[in-house]
Length: 125
Image (tube, rainbow, N blue to C red; front, side, top):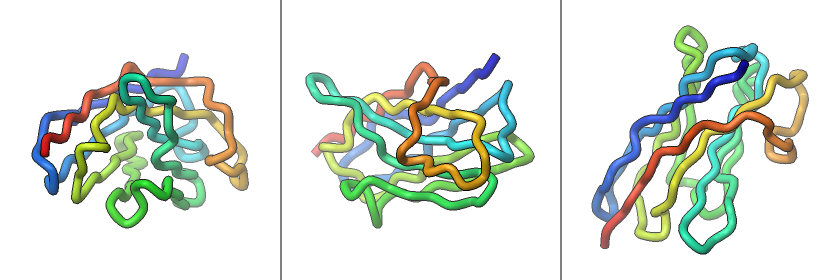
């Protein structure tokens, strides 16, 4: 059974930074798509960042490109989302998602089967 546990959400002021963590278990972390999604009240869920852990290749939504980065720690089965220059519009519940995949899967096009419980990020102006 796949378990994803997010942490690191907080309330920060605009321009600040946060690091979110997603600790995974029950999947082959070294060959997975890991993704971060967010959802704000009244808005559709948005994919923010995607990483293929086998290839260590990441991609980002245009809304966060150049501000957010990801890293992976294979020893801890954990993916991190580094969020810089935060804006009020980044306020949302952030969710980690993951699937076991073959190496050359497009993580951005994947339907994710496994989700964490979410961690809240609030950015004040």
